[in-house]
Structures are given as C-alpha cells and as structure tokens.
Image (cartoon, rainbow, N blue to C red; front, side, top):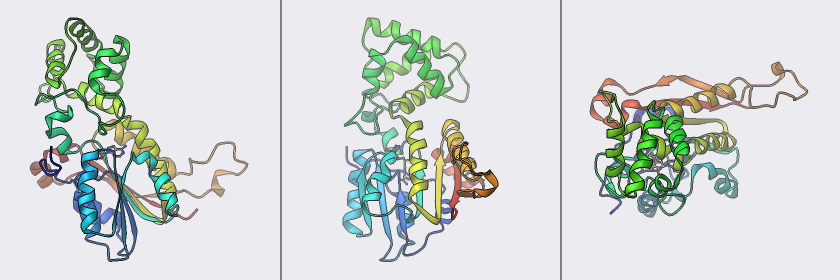
Length: 313
Ligand SMILES: C[S@@+](CC[C@H](N)C(=O)[O-])C[C@H]1O[C@@H](n2cnc3c(N)ncnc32)[C@H](O)[C@@H]1O
C-alpha cells in the first residue's frame, strides 16, 4: 500500500488552529501525525524560526511525515508512541518550552480504509488492528489464544458491549472449529451472536472498537501522553485534544479538571490547597463540529475538542 493511497480529512481544523493560539516562532508538537492535516495547519502559521515535532506509531504515517519533512526544514519526525514524547523532546532540551501540543486521537481514515490493516468490519482483511504492525500482538493472535473470560472482559470494558459474554462464547465455539483469520470471520461471528442489534450501529462496532483500544493500549497511552504533554509545555502553552469516544473524552476531561483544580499534588503535602496554584486553565467549553462539518465529514461526528493552557506555578 502507498501512503497516499488513502486520504484523511482532518476534523475541527479552524478550532484546532485557534485553540493552539500559534506563535509564529513557537515550538509545536503534533502527537498524532496521521496524514498531516493538522500539522500543515500549524505550519502555515509558523515562520522560519518555528518548529514542529511530529509523532506517530504507524510506519505508514511516518513515511508520509518524512515526505513533508523533506520539503519543510521546520518539521522533525519521530516514530514513537506519544507516551514517550518527553523521552525525545527532553533530549532536545525542550522540557517546559513547548508552545502547543495536539492530540487527535484514535485511528486515521487510511488505517480504517485499508483492509490489510484489519481495523474494518465492512471490508474483509487480515485481522490485525495494530497501529504499529511491527510490534505488539495482532488481533488474530489475541482472539485465537485468549481465554473466554479475558475476551468477554475486554469487549465489555472497552466496547461497553452488553452482549460481551455471548460474543466471547461464540468466538470460542467458532475458533474450536477453525481459527479466526479475517475481519469478516470475526464480524460474522458477532452478527450471529447478538440477539438484539442496535438499529443505528453495525453489530460489530463495539467489539472491534474494544479490541483495537485494548491491543493498542490506547487509554493508558492517553493518560501517559497527557501527563508528558503537561510537563513539556511552556507557561501559556496550549494543550489541544480531540477525542472520538466517551472513554477517551472522560480521561481528557478529568485530566484537565484535575490540573485546573490543584489536584496533581499529593494529598500529604504539608501545605494547604489555597497555597497551591492550579497547573492548567481550561479554555472555553467542550467544542463539537459545526452542522456543516457534521454533514460533510462522517469522521467528525463523534469528535470532541478540549483546550487547556498551562499556568505559571
Ligand atoms: C485521527 S489520526 C490523526 C490524523 C491527523 N490529525 C491528520 O490530520 O491527518 C490518529 C493518528 O494517531 C496515531 N496514534 C494513535 N495513538 C497513538 C499513540 N499512542 N502514539 C502515537 N501515535 C498514535 C495513529 O496511528 C493515527 O495515525
């Protein structure tokens, strides 16, 4: 597959641009490059002194980022999970110096649209679902080797699927006959296992989401990434996060609330809370797509944007 074969339409572009409050000569980090839609928006606001560090787990996204970096000296590309951003940026001496950090969570359209990546239940492909197929466990190995209770718990916890036990049972029964190999195999098993499907959602939606979140460690990545981002930001630096489902948004909302109410400090510190200043300020309220974007970009439909600014401590 070529990196430009599948397109990704970035969501909430103007809102991200405003939310980052971009300084022309500032230092910015795009933690989720994808195909660089948001990175290009940041770049159009930077002068020659500005810098943009881009991260992604996905080798195809990194290939696309290298193409951009070859034509724009302000771009530095790092193939890594965003839970490790400070490992790289500390080496550049950037702790406490970054003006804005963006997370556009989840998977990109090229990842979903390419059947070979195994994220899609609407087109059959090898059951993989790893954002970085060069490391970790594929969905195929996990689904064929895990025990029933683990499968059921993952589907319930990360997919909020009420038929998780039935689905896990059906998976075990099916793989006892033949191993599950493709996204279509798994989708068919789920369709047959669910007695009352949701009218507005494909029956496999929640289970696919759950397996993907679990195997890519998405929620722990997010918690670690937000903390790292906070440490890297300069005073008045902006943290901008787009999430796509309630489990992610809950983590972002809690993180921003907690840090804007002094809570990152341990309870047993020998000072009263009125002496401790908040670490972040929330900027505006939750932002969702306009009706126009909602109608024209299917991916935008569940997007939620939250913005916070680092305060002097
Ligand atoms: C929604 S897409 C980003 C799209 C991008 N903003 C654009 O305009 O093209 C999310 C990207 O984040 C990457 N990603 C998700 N979780 C990650 C993580 N923990 N570390 C690094 N990259 C991650 C995915 O591989 C995917 O390419």
